[in-house]
Amino acid sequence: MRGRFEATGNDLNDNDLRLVRWDESMGVQFAEPWYQDPDVLYFSEGPGCQPFNTERLWKMYRYLHHHGQLYIIETFHHNDWRPIGDVTLAQDMMPIVIGDKNFRGQGLGFRVISLLIRYAQEHLKWSSLVAHKIYVYNAASLRVFTKAGFCITHHAKDDRGLEYVRMELPLQAEKDR
Image (tube, rainbow, N blue to C red; front, side, top):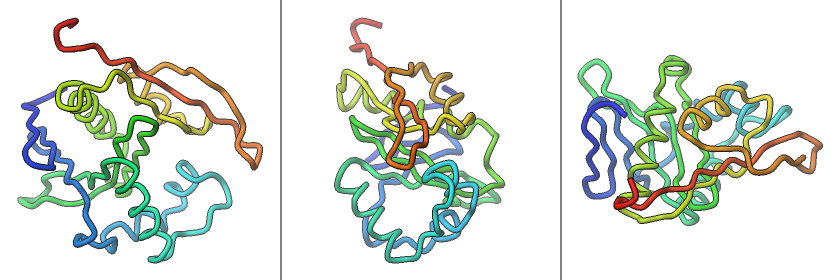
């Protein structure tokens, strides 16, 4: 983990990276290009997934918001904060998308997951985290969750016959570290 971890209000910060807790007043328009990107759709939803329209994006964001803590991933770029993706922290899932292709492959996914691990452990006092469905062809996600300490606990196929894994990370209590 680089930099200084800070949890202020609903946001999590690590220098030039922050996670801003989503609420409906933020809308979804900033995320619409991400869910039009064929790579985002392939790796998160599977092959053949149609681009999200505004209604479908609202439905997904509302579900994630009510099921867990939905954050917009922002990076400080050219003297301003810029939304580049989203992530949800819930005990039974942790979907993450770096939607802006210009920011993929730079280690930001690992930094985001690291922030959420610390937050879940230190502030929420959770005993474990789960990445419930990562397609086996999504090498980048498998790599980042493995690097963060997650282990594969289950292999399965979805209703379309696509193989995926479930990954889990036990969290230690503060005093045990």
